[in-house]
Length: 110
Image 1: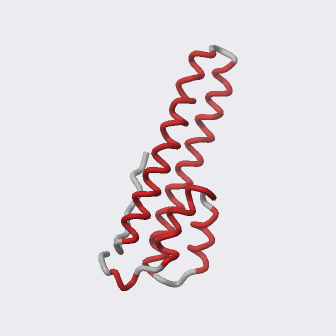
Image 2: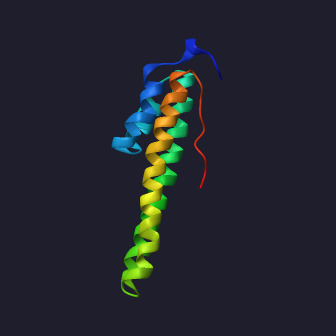
């Protein structure tokens, strides 16, 4: 989709707000809006945030278990959490930029 006329402020902000409030704005905007552009952006953002949150929780659990085995081994999933957090910010900012141009950007799957 590449029409600037159909974009809305919520279709743009849904990605940016996800940096600070995780999946909550995506779900709220998805269920409230009727605009196709906004709904599609909210769905993409919600699916990314769900994937991101589950990945972080799994890595945190693995880190917790590995702490009892070896401190050095527990650093691997902790580094994964750090990298994933940086990627989340970069992806959300890029999706915000793309939606400002009237495009719907799908987040990459892990």
